[in-house]
Amino acid sequence: MPEYYYSPTSEKETISSHSQSLPQYNKYKLSEETKEALKTPGFNMWQWEPNEVKSYIQILFWLKKQKQKNIILCITYFQMLILLEEMYYELGIVDELEINPIILKKFLIRVQEGYRNNPFHNFRHSFSVTQMMYVLIHACKLNEHLSIKDLSVLITACICHDLDHPGFNNTYQINARTDLSIRYNDMSPLENHHCAMCFKILSIAECNIFANCGTEVSKEIRGDMIILILATDMARHAEILDAFKQKIDDGFDFKSEEHLNSLKMILIKACDVSNECRMTNVADPWVDCLLEEYFHQSDIEKKESLPIAPFMDRDRVTKATAQIGFIRFVLLPLFESINRLFPEMEELALVNLRNSLVYHEKLKEAMDSQEADANKQT
Image (cartoon, helix red, strand yellow):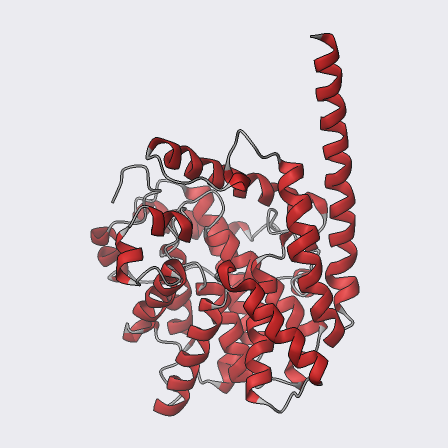
């Protein structure tokens, strides 16, 4: 693997971590306020409520014992893991699927370890996508149309959808002829890899949260998760969105498996690109993270004489121009389509999307004005 790839946990470290016992910390007590906030798009994943001092001390002791280098980052991971755990319990997934609580903890920890330290495609992004799915489940009352098994697939697919992302997109994988593109014959190499990594974790007995589901149900869950994770490939965006729109035009049938699969694919796609549906103070840092990752890739592509996408070139794109086109031509049509089925989407997403578009248009106007003034002076 090229040295400029963001380094994942080494195989030796992964094997070692699997042999470690879970940290013996007191159960993190989420306030009712936090639990309710978790169900809203206004939830700020860049901030966390203070933990009990006693719990922090125990976590710090365990981390030092394990020789973790970034203690603050690890504490943040623990907080995210516990919030994800809350989702499984609150939605009734643990009870319905008879998930062993210790296995759930181990599964979530292994998944967190499976994410690389990329600027954007990292575990915090995984959490953000999952939290937005949790918001939609509650706000759109998806439990009235989907089984708890379906909800478990939606949440778990979101958590795992970018596992072991290398920080370089599919276009790079294909143009550079990486091992992933060769292995998956240029067909959604990253998404296929994320799927494989997910089921590699689930193949470990102590991490298999679906162990008590039975052979047939487990097979259904696997099939559904593959469909959803593969749907996050943006190369398939138009195909999936057009199919969903057609089903709405024809009259959406909540009793049809085909229609429900289309809905679930649209939902995970929407959550994957939902940052701009949040308040500006939450959404804005994500744009910076994504551009950092894009620019890093384009710098490498220039060195390797590979094709460069204009929206990833630091010499051709700005924060404002990147978001204006994305919001106008991708996000608004996507969420407006979902709004036809779930009117709740207007307040959940579309209001902030339109505000974000205005925000970035004004940002572009200010930058254009500054550039014009600078040109006059020269």
